[in-house]
Length: 485
Image (tube, rainbow, N blue to C red; front, side):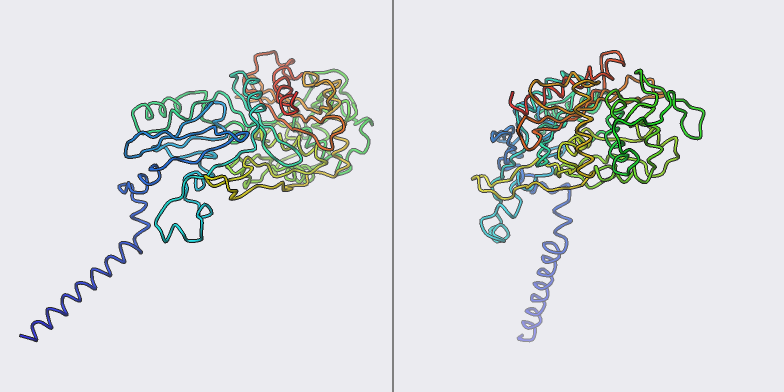
C-alpha cells in the first residue's frame, strides 16, 4: 500500500510541476502575445479606467476627460478642438492616438516609469500612476491669430521663436474636432468615415505632414548657397542673367513676371523675385553646393520630430543642370513642409543657426512636479553668420520696398520672402501662395518670431499672390500677436 501512495504522490508532484511550467509559459514566455491579443480587453479597460493627463497651452488645459460610467470609462474631451487639433491630435478608444496624444502617450496615460514615486514602484505594486500633463510651447494668442488669418482657406501656418526653437503656433485648415473621435459609439464610426471621405482632408496636418513645392521662398536657400560658396560676393553687382533664360541643355525658356530682371543684381532679384536670375544662379553655384546648403537648413533629414514626427522636406541630390535651375527657384521636385520653411526664416534671423524646433516645454506629474523639460539646442548651422547678415538685409528690403510690403509692421524690423509654387498637371492648378518672415523689435538681441504661411487656395489673381496678397497678411497677423501688439 505504501508503494501505491508513493507512486500517487510522485504523479501528483509531476502534475504540479507541469502546472507550474505551464503557468510560467503562459505568464512569462507568452505574456507579450497574450497582452497584444485583440481579444484581451484588460489593457484597454485599465488604460481608459482613469482620467488622462492634460495638454496645456499657456498653462491652461485644452484637453479633458469625461467619466462615461461605461467599461472603457473615460473619454477624451477637447476645448477649441479644431483650433488645436494639429497640436493635440486625437485620443480615441477605437482609432488610437495621433500627434502629441501619441508622442506623449506614456506621460498622459500614466504608464511612463518617470511618473512613479520610486524606481520599479509600479512593477512591485501592479498599480498605474495618474496621468501626467504636457505643457506645450504654443502661445494661444499666436495660434488664434494664425487660425483666424487663414479664415478657413486650405493652408497652414508654422511659427517659431528663432532663439530657442519653441513652436509658437501650428495651424492647419480646414480642421476638425478631435472630440468627435472619442468614445466607442456609432457616432464615432460615422465621424471617422466622414472625415476620411472629406476631399479637403481635415485630419491632414498640413503644417507638419504635408510637403509643398516652396516656390520662390526657396530662393533664400539658393542665395545662401551662392553667398557661402563665393559665387556671389557683391549684393549689388550685375549677375549677367538674360531674360528670358534658357534652361541649360534645353530649348525651354524661363521668364519673369516683373520688369528689370535682365542682368539684375542679387538685391534687386531677391526684392522682386526674378526667376531668371535665381535659376541661372542655382545652375552656376552647382548641385553639390546647393544640396549641401539645403541639407544644412534641414532638407533631406528624415529624423525630425517635435516630438510628433515631421514629414521629410526634400531636395534632390541627383539632377541635371536644367532640373537644378528649376529646383533653385523651388520648383521641379523640391518639397518642403511649412515647419521647414519657418526654420529657413529662423536661420536667417538667428545668424545662420537653426535651433531644434520643439512643441513640448515640459512634462509633469499630475501634482505638477516636473518630469522632463526641453532646452534650446542647435540642430544645424545653415550658413555662415556673415551670409545670414546679408540675407537679413535682402529679406528686410522685400518687406520695406519689394513684394512683401503687406507684411510690414510699424516700428518693427520685418524680413520676408514671398513665393508662388506651381502645381497640378501641366502646372494648371492655382499656385500655392507662400510667405516666410521674421520680426524683431528695436533694441532686442533676437527676433521674436519666424513664420511660414502657405495658402493652397488663393482667391486672387496670380500677380497679387506673387506680391504677398494672400499669405503675407496672415504672417503679419501672426507676427503682431507674437510681439504682443
